Image (tube, rainbow, N blue to C red; front, side, top):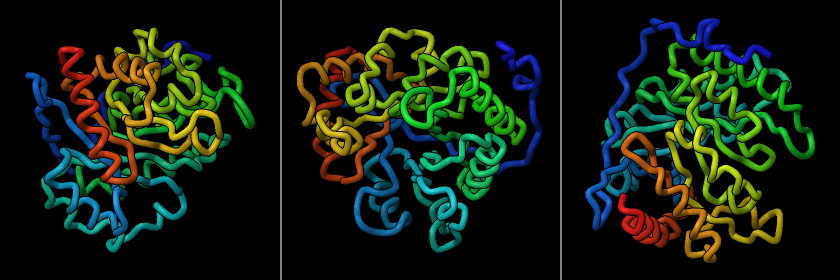
Length: 288
């Protein structure tokens, strides 16, 4: 595989007319001089995306639009993504589907870009992507995973997006270290999920400076229970962290700068409310 795919066009300027990107607000961190962009998912209570966003408007700076299912989200219309979302004092990013057909990278790219076109009226530029897996059932070899990701990144760039805005997340079966070289070569961004580090043993990421240099987003959550598969995948308040988990959270949060979005990736506002002061205390301790 070509170790420097950006020389084949990823660094070129692409001119495509798009809705102007909405500048994210920044949120003062209590007790510090830091200002960061805070975000929450588009599902924190029962209701539509619009109802959730109205609820969140005065609580966070940005909303993560949850596009977890490819077919259903591609079928979204005005009722699902009303134009009124653009009038709210919020910026937005997209969490891309969990069911992407990774054996066919061209199909993956078509789905991703179709979803981005749906939210162009909101000025969305950033998206979180679960990469092709390199461990476990249905995993790809590292070389194939890198090739698949390269196809998608090239399509993303050709569509007029900056590769630094396609954020690759550490998930079960993909701790990012295997694909770190291609992330760097393609100029991709990184999203680090604190709960996934703890749940899936991604602790080696904590010492991977090259990946943290590309950090654009942090997902804040804790695994509900590390002893069961269901518990590992369920996102819970940071109240669930033991001392070892708190160490992981502090190590990740120390890299949260002004160009990094802090996402409280919890699907209940009550859980977010209990997590915010814990994060603020950790940021204060780290001197952020």
